[in-house]
Image (cartoon, rainbow, N blue to C red; front, side, top):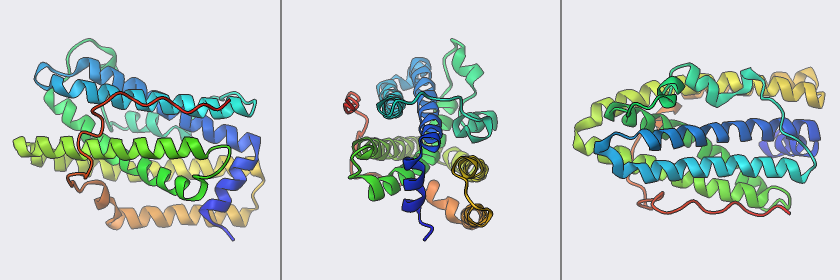
Length: 262
């Protein structure tokens, strides 16, 4: 039976597909770490109180990248270059979702609108990340090889999502509500299309590595298109609602250390 658990187990059991999966994940996390680090350094004077939380967000993302690198090393594998069509974070940046890298590489302070755009983009992408890690934790949280890693990353992603909700609600209370909603909607509609295209590219690559029959690849492709149709018709709205989280100041402390994989 074709299930999320059986598919990921198949990827996990094959070195080539596992290396591709971990390489894609590590690359995206390291990029997120760099982006958040630069944003923290460039926060405008009036929003400097946010800088430690943004820096913590970046430290968490970079930690996740090191975790995926460690998972590869544990199996005696090296990270590979990520195929461009599967590079979710770089495609988001290329399509104008989030802050452009040219701005982050400069030394000029960001504007308040830039910070709101960053938080709105993060609200959307952290929703996706949190859902994916919840799924992996449900199926593989007790797995001897990756269980510890997915549990830690899952908790971090929940904290990141809580932080985005709280900070955006605080900014909305200051009068930025209309801008926040516009940016959230724009980011969500762009993200669901990018996620569809990246998912199709990953399925194509995995299918070649694992020798999937045409019928299996076709079924997975149909499922990806069905998910996009659901999200386009209204599922995207889950990415733009804002609720005060039960855990406040979720990124108020230092990043936790990554687990040992010796």
